[in-house]
Image (cartoon, rainbow, N blue to C red; front, side, top):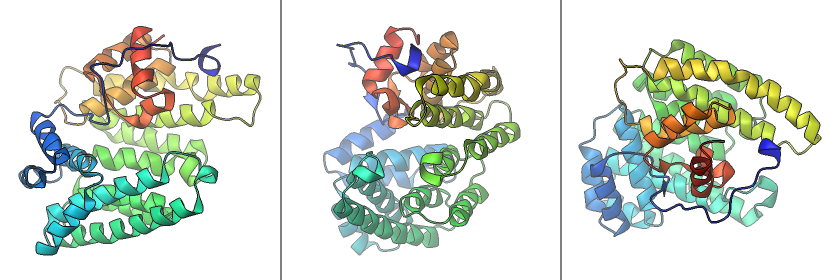
Length: 329
């Protein structure tokens, strides 16, 4: 029963839901649509007026790069005219990272062809060079370092190098939600080979240091979701063994997750641009922690704008809609 046998209900209504546009930002929505139409100037203008070292800049850079996937050559042409423009370098570099991961696909490594891996690595190397240029052009900007984490992950850089990239982002923006969520992926067992205890220790430390009301408290949910995935997808153990491991490794962390939620979501908190993403991650985590009422509260606060991580683990838009229909049961 439960996670190990449940299937999504057929015919789930996903109208009104949006995948991988987890923001409530009218200016970004307008720029995203313009870039999709081929109007790069509108996107660049928005990035240039977005304050540095804020979660807003991280989200806008990410959103504009998602919109520009498939248009990296147009960005490259613009860069030829303005080779040291920090915003253009950042945008181009992040777009290349997204294009690279699209080439690799989300399949397991053993199912990805050698040709795809070669192309994946080639694009990421170019992205890393471009991002280094962005770092030189805007030494105080944290976002190129945030994005560089994903290039380093794909290029299988040493753990020490990945740690240096993470800390470079934090020096510039200690409250960076993107840097911390990226770090969770870097430390996830599927990428790092590390034991889950190291990932959990990282998440607990972030929550402990975060001020009350900070969106960084929700890193507990990101960590929870990666632990959930690792345990739930373990095919090497019997069903009974997996259920026991689930009970000890996932269900048992419900109190810590609820405590992190309580530290984050309080009357004195200041709204953050990363709240939409954080609410989606928290809704997923609380659902699997059997805190259904709390999960629904956060799911509704996403306004139907969710991300592939973590909802892609259970069907993306369909999985989210199904969870809402079932009241997170």
